[in-house]
Length: 300
Ligand code: NAD
Image (cartoon, rainbow, N blue to C red; front, side, top):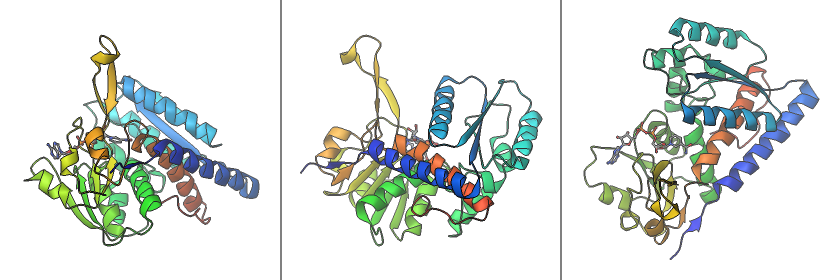
């Protein structure tokens, strides 16, 4: 058996296209342009790449993009003052503070300073609580992208057994909440889980968000299961030349694709969905702030 490869790149392009159409409609019918403010503190190279890419896609979707770059030694009070200004700014509907922040800053305090209505990353304690209690929330982008792919593939997820490997606040925990919200029977596995292969073997849906290259093996997977690989790991690729590297997920793709029913590749699976969901969240936030109906299928 050979798994269906889930094309996250194509699905993300479809979502971005839908967001673009809705943005054009908002402009034409209401004279509103959604705006996303991205704040980057410091010069972390990976964060710079992410922020540039977010800005480009925001503009391509017809939204306004506001970038704020602060030096690494910015006092926390200065960042909090900027967030306050963005909270008050009517042109800004989404605020994203790129993580990780420099060590002298209290990440939780910074995130919780963002207006929950503009918290497009869905990390504010109020949005976390709303998601956990089944209320309308801003939902973290990566798990939202995974959920959209699963719904697209299966329609109704109700009753399916799901294992989420990883319990981070950014991916694992919100992913588990979303699957629970869709009536899956959810197990959260983590670094202390006993017999991880046995736990994974029982699942119809496996979401791997660990950060360990190719850890989940094909023989762990239940035949026909759907495998969503969130991991992004850079490993040496001597076959491409000296000093070269390549990206792999948390799942051993080659062996897993022989057993699974469907699987996301890395790259080209979950990754592109994350930015598409950031745009979708910005649109959703804008509609909610203005009391307008939200477009269907772009949130949880
Ligand atoms: P994290 O380091 O915060 O969390 C990792 C989790 O894995 C922890 O909860 C830990 O308990 C668990 N874990 C560690 N070792 C384990 C083991 N041996 N067995 C079982 N569980 C184990 O990481 P994160 O922020 O959740 O990210 C996870 C991965 O997803 C990383 O590779 C990251 O780069 C990637 N990621 C991708 C996207 C995307 O857009 N595709 C977004 C966010 C994160």
